[in-house]
Length: 499
Image (tube, rainbow, N blue to C red; front, side, top):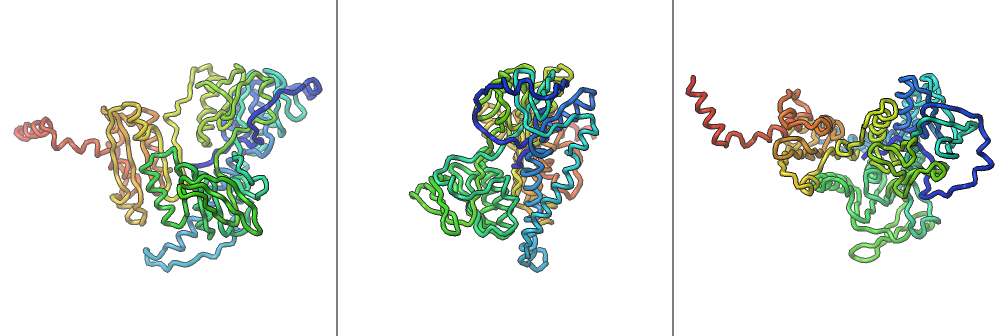
């Protein structure tokens, strides 16, 4: 599952109001229509569109433009995964008649590739570009002074509407001994410029498994410790396929393994794990904490603005409005799914409400989520278990990559697609595990969002040979029982008699 491109303010779980009397008169007054706090994907989307419609926009960012996704999240992780995939291809070329070789990996060059990718994208999110679009950019922390005033840099900003898009940071659990043990997070692991001999990953979610596979393919030994079930929010059948492939590749994934404490030893890290067999220890060279995200709330002084919040983030309604009617919150800081595309979608909701006064609301059922392991795992809409729990009368349509000619040609036949429809044939959800699942899910995201009937997915012409045919193949199985239906046979017989 990919990491969101969100703002990168430091994380805290609580705030206490402070005496603002010393700063309330500080700063040059600056009035605007919309003040956006956080220059990640969601904040940038709001600022871009609002400025395009002629609104005065102020954009405040404490750290780097582009937020966490560009600088320490989605983009660097995908660049690292792309490098690792090439190393893996070199080791596994023999089935294609090419001698497999062990790649010679220059870890500093790998990290330079990651930095080059970030640098190539950064101009799109730069201060210069947004200034050119008419956005006033202020680099500094934003702090509410009251319900309609923010202090940022040298300015005291008043606005008709505020949009908080400060994102999230790695959630570091209170594991005994961790405060005395060196550890990495998804934000610091990209600084490593040498091989990590044995990486221990605490957390079997999308971030943990993506980074685990990347480092395995770059030559590390990797152990993943997950207290519950790895990829616990995904379809269990698809997860089983993905985990089987990751384990076959060499990742030691231990589920039901609760970390009790950690120790920093001479030259290595020791992790004490509680399992069904009792306490076990795992020794490694490096420790990666990948146990989730926590919203970036510090510096904001939310109580001064009358904004309610909790451990999961700022409280919002379906229109993304906070308890302060002037303020919206989007993305990770609002506690929603931690994906860049979710932040961008929520930005559209806010723009429709703030600019056009439309009663737009978030529909979480249309949001796809992806885990970018190999094989990839992608989903949108209801899973089979969720559809059954909702008491839908449903049909489950399947097709396997092993049945797909392009997958056979490329030697990537692991995985399947599973489509869930209601009794009438409307698409409720789809899950894909296999090659390019992140691309193949898009047509199903459209189907769920537009409430399409499965016949729409069966009636288009799919080019041959492509992986995309697997979706149409699943859709056609909606009609698999037609030849056995008595009424259909009688109709065909009747038409045949007409010559």
